[in-house]
Amino acid sequence: MSAEQDKTPQPQAPAFDIKDYRQPLVTSLGVVLGFLVGFLAQWVSEDDFALANAADTLVFCGCLVGAVLLMIVLFRMLSPPTAGDPGSSNSPLTFSSVFSAASCVS
Image (cartoon, rainbow, N blue to C red):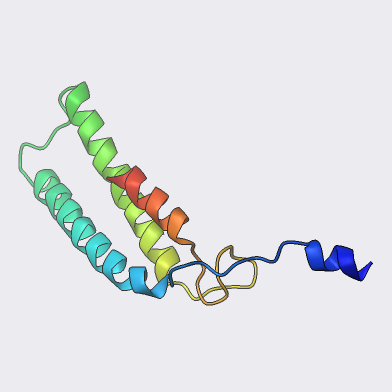
């Protein structure tokens, strides 16, 4: 029985530490979110703002969805980890989940 227990694969620690990627990602996501919200604010504050055609609606909805996704990513990155979160013991996110969420937005 002890020989079988020795053959069970042990989880390996990742080759990187998520905190090395967290600060630059928070900074870059904050900058992109700031520009996106600034663009939307400038657009909707015009006196003749109207979603006149399908292209306007598509761009507006895409920007709105992108801004919401960026806020969700920032919230999750800045939230303290909980016991049920996937990833390492000191981070609620894995690098792959952050990368996939960020690539969906861009």
